[in-house]
Length: 455
Image (cartoon, one colour):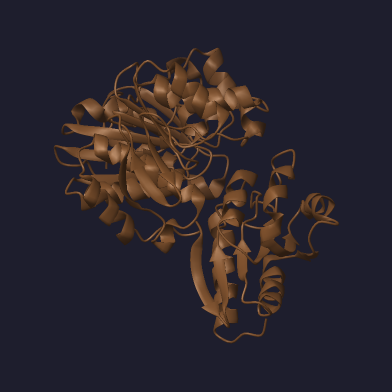
């Protein structure tokens, strides 16, 4: 583990005992802190490495800091009572990424890459760590991708940490100061937690502000928010795009990767030949990875070779299997409209499974890609929103549950060898524990159909 000794001999509250909270407890205890751990759920408290202490009943005047999980609301729709209690007592509220920042000075000399964006950040984190490792460097991906940063073992001298950060984690981080920071894209998401688009953009921008003018900022400039940041940051900026040429940056055009960071553009080679990097959006991910990996010393030919050996991540355009010419694609991670749009752009003859807890305001952005959709199968709590949008545009049926949707889509797709695509454009919590659970159910049912279960 990464040991945080900055609070040795001090009392620290830890609220939220899921993966990152438990890792924080272990790290702080190992570093000599007196940890007061609490979770509202008894089942979570039972996993605590220290005896739970009900923080709602504690006097915060003696606390040095309160560590909270990223899911704890800080401001919107209103601050969690323990966050308010900490603020009232003048106690700093922080997250596990800030704890890692405090531990950096005691670790072997290393570099840090921080990755965020509305979509694509997990794939980019994993792909960059893979490219760095294939390029002969000691690298590890962690963070919001699923491995708590304090649970990893320190890398040897010269190692490179590649961390995925959500906007929630960025709100809880003050001094991480990554040598390379990446924002892939910004589109509306989590506005119920941030209160407004401007607050959400400000949270993302923190990844660059923590660099304090040093280091390298890699910015996707295919949206207006990224372009605005690229024009105003004081540090070195490398713009990246999957839409075409960008001056001084890295971009993909017609499936070919180009590097113009030294002035004149140079053709590097094709991207997207690996099925794990299928889709236009993965061109943006690849361009960002190339820019970061080059800055960190990996040769272009090694980066391109690493693209070909990348195996992808579960629930991100994951190819589950094929039967009778029908391909089953699990993109359960596409939990917002921007991510689902990119999924639909990647395929033709799509039998689209969508729905769940809708967290945005409109589906109109799907209009240009509805020509890719042969039929839609709607599930979950907010399926009526999709019904109202799709009516008179494409055929659809209200399947209600994922299993019914998969079997109906498989039956219909047999007619033309289409693609059964789970790209929900919604959160999963109405019917599933999380997007991983939703993707696992898709896998299970799809594989049953592939192995001979009647559609």
